[in-house]
Each structure stands twice: as structure tokens, then as C-alpha cells.
Amino acid sequence: MNGKGKMKITCGTDIIEIERIQKSIEKLGEKFLQTIFTEDEIAYCEARKAQKYQHYAARFAAKEAAFKALSGNLKGGMNWQLFEVKKEKDGKPKLAIKCNVKDLENVDISISHCKQYATANVVATWKESAQFFDSHAHYNDEKFDEDRETVIQQIHNENITKMVCIGYDIESSQFAVKIADQYDFIYATVGISPNDIDNLQIAEIDKIRALAKNNKVVAIGEIGLDYYWNKENKKSQQEFFVKQIELADELDLPIVIHCRDAVMDTLEILKHRINPKKRGIFHCCMLNKELIKEAVKLGFYISFSGNITFKNAKAKEAIEEVPLDKILIETDSPYLTPEPLRGQRNDSQNVKLVAEKIAEIKGLKVEEIAKISYENAERIYQIQNKIYKEPRFKKIKQQK
Ligand SMILES: [Zn+2]
Image 1 (cartoon, rainbow, N blue to C red):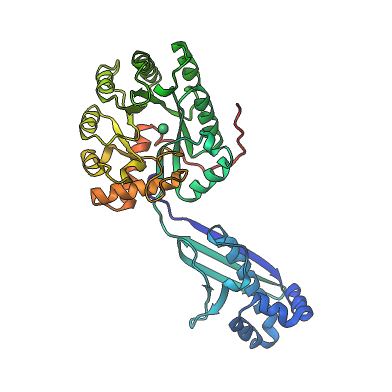
Image 2: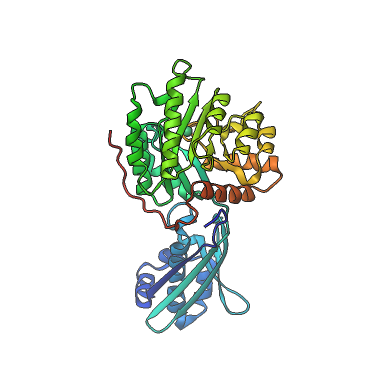
């Protein structure tokens, strides 16, 4: 599975008892016909004289089969008049659809009838569409408590086919693992962020170690230094950062770094890491060309979020600095909503806006950035070999 979608095909089949249709027409007459069939269909069937019920039944079956094949991308419920069976000059039936069906490339139809039954088959082929990997989001945040399952279902429908739910303290890490366990397309990270170390003993990292044993955990994070929010406890922040880097080394996991107003100290710690082969991600990258240059030199991936779309953001020179094979895209949902949606709660669908901005600056298509960043994320999180399965949407309850 990579950033490009596989061609999707959906089918619908229906078998209709001709007698059932005949009885309905005899009983309900015009009213029934006009609800189900178009004027052209009625004219066509009526002209078949003795055979007319077979033809009505075949069209009835075709409409039901079409609804089954297309329902995932149709807005609203079943409307019989949306579909019309036409006979082409070559004698083959064709399905006319009287509304726009999102991403539909082609639809094939076959109908037949014998004495008792009419059958119809509809095969829909869908356009290949770009798929996105949101490398950093917080569906464990309380801002999703009201509608978490609905949003997760929606983002998956919108081609966000992989996502990493990021922990930032012990409780949110537990919840990230729980969410990842419920949804095949979601992975988790566990870690204690520099803004969440108050009242914690360093020994509590053992709880992160225990959580990291879950096979959906793909990194230790987010960890790092934040001197913007907390200047008073720099030593303690550094201790938690280093200990968790050691933990990542021990478990052979990459790290997800949160760094704010602490570039020099962060780079200093990374340069003297115990195992220089271990890599990670600078998340929500500060648009600082020098930091990016150093981070890339150390082999780190750079993850861009909605802040590259903000006015005055130095997005251009920052994005230009990152080689394509090190670029990731993320939303940091529910925060950092990109323009033009700034102010609303963020969710993973908006990772497309981040991809658009990068595509514009790199002079590539959005689909190309989607594919490249997808493969990069699979590589750094070491999940490229895991088999993609259709998601199971089970109920999740947060335990507090
Ligand atoms: Zn975050």
C-alpha cells in the first residue's frame, strides 16, 4: 500500500420476481409506474406489449442493483428516478445516472429475464484517488470526546488511510494505544512531552516502556524541549528527553520531537545521542531554515503542519530546505487548523491543505506529495510491511 489508491470496484446484483412487479402495476397503476420509472422507460416497456412486465422487472432490478453498487458515494437515500435504463443502438443496456456521483469513473450494467425472474448486475469503477498519511494527530484529546468515532469514520472515508495518534503524557499515551487497537489504519506513539512533566518522577517512564510493547506503537513521542511554555524546569525537561531517547533506542523505535524555542539544546542533545543511527521526526516543524538544515543533516524527517499555510509564515524557504524523501505531512489535530479554516477544530482531512501548500512550493502535484509523504511516513514509522486491512469501526470508550 502506498500513497496511490488502488482502483476500487463495487458491484450490485438484484433478482426480481416478475409476478411481484406485475401485481404492483395492476394494483397501483400509473402512480406506481411514475414513482419507479422514467417516462422513457415506461414508453419503452409499454411498447414491448406482452413482454412488458419482464422489461419493467429488469429495470426495477437494475435500479436496486445500481443503488447497491453506488450507495457509498450517493448523497441522500434511494431515489428511483436517479437511474434510467437506456437501450443503446448496439442493443446493450446502459445506465444513465441523473446526479453527480463522486469519484465514479465508469458504470457497466447487464440485465436479463426469464419467465419468472429478472436479474440485473451493476459494476462501478471508481477513479484512482490520492491517499494521505496524517503523521501526527491527537484523537486522544478531549476535544474529540463528543464525536470521536464519527470523525474517525469521516476521515477514513476522505482517503486518510493511515494516521498516527500521538501521546503526550501517560494517560493520553494509554488512550492513543487504545484507539490504535480499535482501528486498523491508526497507529500510536507513547511518550511524555516537556509540557507534561510537572509532578512526574523520572521512574514513571517505566509506564511508557510498558505501553510501547504494544505492536501498534510506532514511536516514542512526543518528547523534547519547550522553553516557550516552561523556562523554569529546563534541567528536568532535558532529563525526561534524554531518558526517553534512551528508551527509544532500547526498543528500536524512532522518536517524535516537540521543540519550541529550544533549538540549540535540542540539537545538542540529539548530536550526542547514545545511538546515532536512531532517527525520528521533527513534528510541526518551526519554520526555521537553520534548524531544518541541522535536523536533516542528522537524518531526521521534517513534518509540516497547518502553520505553513498561515500568513507571514516563512513556509517557502523552510519547505525548500527539506529534501523530498524527508517530508511528512500532519495536522496536529485538533490544533493548528490550516488556512482558510483557521479557528475551527482541526481534523485529519485538512492534511490535504498542508499537502497542497507543499506541492505549490515544490512545483509538484498534490497527488505526488501525498504519495511521497505517505511512503516517507511508512518508512520512518517502520510500518510499510504491515498489511493494510479494512478498518473495523468498533465502539471506543475513554477510561478516565
Ligand atoms: Zn502534537
